[in-house]
Image (cartoon, rainbow, N blue to C red):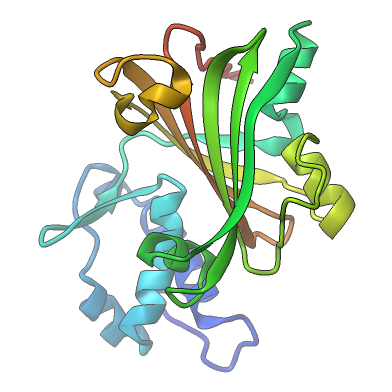
Length: 242
């Protein structure tokens, strides 16, 4: 493959690097677990800064396509998961489709400062104020999942909004934002600090789901984490091989 950047193109450098990396990681040699070239080598070969390389690799890492180990290197993830939000419902909508009425047991909208991870995902400076929305969802008063969402700075959600609405309906109505794609990471952990909120013990295993959400322009709009009670919820994935 031709691995070079068009410095005369109107397409941002990090987007060009991202496209090249997507081609690179599809090659058999990297699918077999070999490490990608080092950031400094990629930067020198392409004539761009290391920050540009890092911005592109961060995007692919958040999508679950790459695994990066500090001091070791970056390689292609062995398994990937992506959810098409055109076929995906909010938790409330999903429960309604099953005839189950879910409710908000706790709601809070506040503001926090972006840490390194959020700043990298949204491509903003650390310390930038971000809207945060916390929701505890349950059925018949019994908690099932605790969600925390962080939004791009252009999205301002506060206590004056109707927080009872499904989130993506609120984003559509208030900001004319449609969500079309998410990248997700799912793992298990102990309830820990979320035990009291979920009404379970600190050592109880729960399901942890991390979601990176994008709009039609592939711009990041939301970083969301969900803590699910494992005795109340099963995360099912349907795969069609057509």
